[in-house]
Image (cartoon, rainbow, N blue to C red; front, side, top):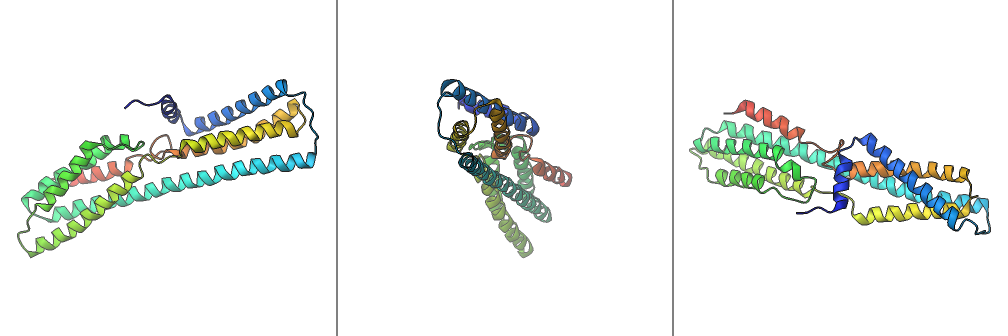
Length: 269
């Protein structure tokens, strides 16, 4: 599948450190503010409108506050989504390790094949599937490995009542693991729609235009405008950092799966 140019730019930005991304957004916001302000200054700067300092301060402060509140609310939502994914992954690896420990109790020959399949599945999550978590894509190999585990397990027949009870417990754990897996996959590729970024750009533009018309047109005014917009640029950069939970320096890594994989390998065979 071919990616659009915008998506390539986004991926290149996430290669940078979080601090660098913040500096980038602050710089981009300030440059855009200065460019638009000076374009207005040299094109319609001769227009003289009635001025009212109190009215200007009130209007400018209101719009800046609206922009800041929107960005702050969006940032809280993005951080909340990241924490939700973290909790979901912690739950999944806990269930996965419990499943492996329960399988160790069973002395049925076919269970060894199931454990080997479980190891292969976790390894595939780490090495293959995790690369696709940033996008709304599936990794067929990992899904097939998981399906094979289910088919192998439901084909197991207990030799006595004790094994039957353990198999019943394992079946319940496997059901929980299936729910946890699909819950994690449902959270893949979560990010703000493009209309959000268009709306923010519109708010920033309106803010700059009204600042231009409601204040004295001078270098000092452009400096104050730059300060205002740089604060909004920091919020915008933070939203961008947390917008894609699975990529970037602050993105969720597969470390939890790697740790459980090492513990499972230590218990195998």
